[in-house]
Image (tube, rainbow over all chains, first blue to last red; front, side, top):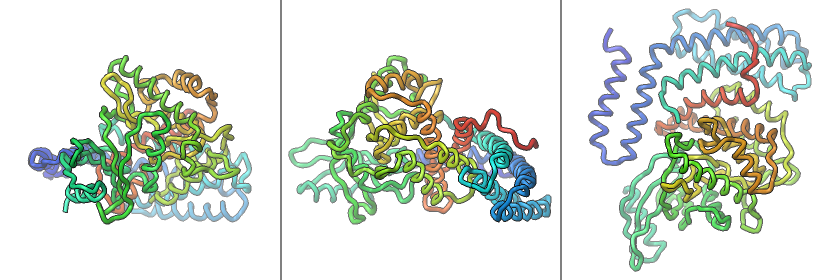
Length: 165
Length: 338
């Protein structure tokens, strides 16, 4: 149904560019309006595909955390055991999420997932004496794969911004 | 009351005679400070051009208030082009927030990389000045020139250790969510702390975009000294040589990396260590991502409406990929397939 979100954002953009910006005398404020317009353009390009980007991140996080389970289970000590428990709880909650959950609900779940990956990174650092070298290697390989894919997704968002030097 | 009349009153008090301020206008850029240009005149003095740098309500960088002023004051002795600072005010009475005033230097500002479209002769002159100024900073007798107030790693602590701990502290304070890439990077840095053979003055933000140049490419002023400190000169080399500021295979869009390092070695008499350079490229990228996260926090918590902070935050995606490549993570990373 029109107006959709893109129409709304375009309307605000036109208002800023055609009505508000010409009425401004201060070049600095006009420039701020230009940057705001750029961000609206970014939002316009992002919103139709945002659900895919969020779904990709969500699926990748779940897959990564699932792949970490056997490595965590093989490690001795309270810290890996605590992380293992939390990862299992996260995955259970994630699979119980409704398929039509709101995007902000999924994003909040993913923030929790990244927190767990973050804890796994810390577990694999050389200062974690309890983690044997081969187990650390397996953890890093799994986590690094996620980091590379995640960075690639975030970089793709920059193309939507259309701003570079 | 707007800023201009209050500034007029402040300057009149400082100079002891009525001062007239004109052409007062805020300038874009410099997200760590509000920057305003203006002219001032008073009895016996024709119109002079000045720059006002005021602390913002929230910024990308939360540096010490008087730091940049004191650095600029001492930097005159380096023999490098810097603006002359005139007045520093730390209290809120005059303009609500701390600020300082410096004389304006004529020149053009570049983006964070020297524009590829500019003529080669112009780029060559800027590149030559760029390396010469950096070499002068690194060769300076910082104690004799009065830079000993600057932050230093402390006795018995490697500068790299101090720098990593400093930025980890800022990251932990300012992040509003987990960033596994940065946690991974701090672990990478912790495992590779290099030893330093000399402690020098470090500019801390030495790159294109932070100097003014004339139409021929000569650098007329080196700016943005708020992150200056004492440390390993490779920190400036690594920062300037970050992929983020590079274009067309040139450091800061100016000159190839090998050429940059060779000229720096020739002008300082020091040796560039490629291992340390890589360490400081990683640290520089971590630092830039952390600076962006400080801006994102201020934005998300409603302390600022500066749209450029959102743009810098979105650009962190590029820094993340570059960081993984610098750590050699990107090319061979495995992990689960989706």
